Structure formats: structure tokens, C-alpha cells
Length: 239
Image (cartoon, rainbow, N blue to C red; front, side, top):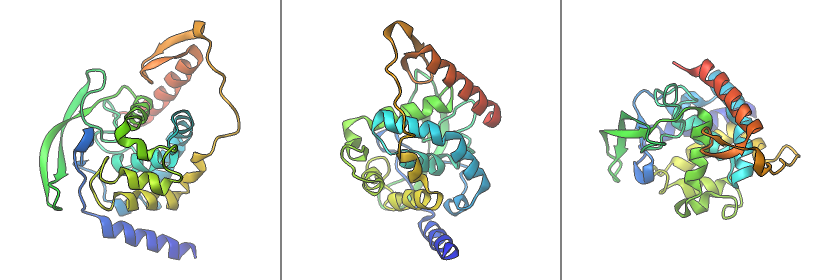
């Protein structure tokens, strides 16, 4: 049964290879050098990538009312499990979001879809972050826009509806939801959609400090945790 499931998902991944994403709403297509989609399945590096960002995604998902499973699947798909040129240091952009982040960006070659399935290449600016933490929180900020309301838990009762809402908004690739759903199902990412069973205390106002990783004020304890997590990730994946 497991073998049949693997083959079915791998076949679907092969079927959707080559479909391009658009540059709509700050989102790009795909930067050069990404591994094709079927290589995600059973890839040890992908399991390791999930183990690194999974709990942070769970935390952000609970804080922001979004599906951690979808966030992780998009990070896997968009960054080649944290191995694309855009996702490693010094850029740390896990989601291929265009534009600037606090004035920082990098120009890279990317391919786009003209709306008829034909791909073309352009050079475009992508947001550059100080860490993966910052990239993940900026992604959550992007999904807070009304444009992406259908992706959030308040409007999407399950991850299928959330990925469907990303198709035509975050990406015009008609197979985008199918790609993300296959990744979520293969790696069992819905486990990250449930809380760990404890509540985080509201930080006292007097302990608020500026946290550049999240782009907001947090407690000094959260800042220290973000710094430690960022140093670990940047040291492991930095170039």
C-alpha cells in the first residue's frame, strides 16, 4: 500500500513538472537552479528541512491563523527544501517573494508564465532577509492581506481549500494546489497544524524589545530564541 501511495504521488509530481508560476502580487515564478518537483519525494534533505522549520511553522501558524502544513509545503516547493540560490545565505528567501524587505533585495533570473502556458525569463528583484525566521514571518504577513483571505483558517476549513485559494493568487500555475497537496500528504505535514497543547503567555509591555527577525516588538526571551535558531540555521545552510 505504501509503495502504491509513493508511486501515485511521484506520478502526479512528474505530470505537473514544467508548469510555470507567475510573478503576481510580489510572487515570482521559479529562480534558476531548482530541482524538479519529483525529486522532493523521499528526499533525505527534505526530511531534514522539515525537521528544522516544522516547529517554527507550527508556532507561526497558531499565531497567525494559517496552515503550517501549507507554509512548509510552499517552502519545500519554492526553495527546493532550503537549497535554492535564493533561499541560502545571504538572502534566506524561502518563498520566492519579490520586492524588498526592509530595503534589502537581490536581483535574480526567473521564469514566468505568460498566462497561456508559455514560459519566458526575466531578471527581477526578490526580498532578502536576515534569516529564515524573518522570511517565514514575512510570508505570514503577506497572507494577512485581504487578497489572500481565502488561504487563512478563518475562511479555509482545511488545507485543500487553502492551497486552492493560493492558485490564481500566489501563483497562476493551475497545478499549484495539486503540487502542494501531494507534498503535504506524502510528508504528513498536517501534524504541524495542531498546537502542542500549551498557551504562550502574553509578553509584558515592559519587556518588549525590537525583534528584527519578526519585524516587530517581542519579549527579550523570544528575541534570544530567534537569535539562537537563526544562528543554527545560518551556520548550517549559509554559504
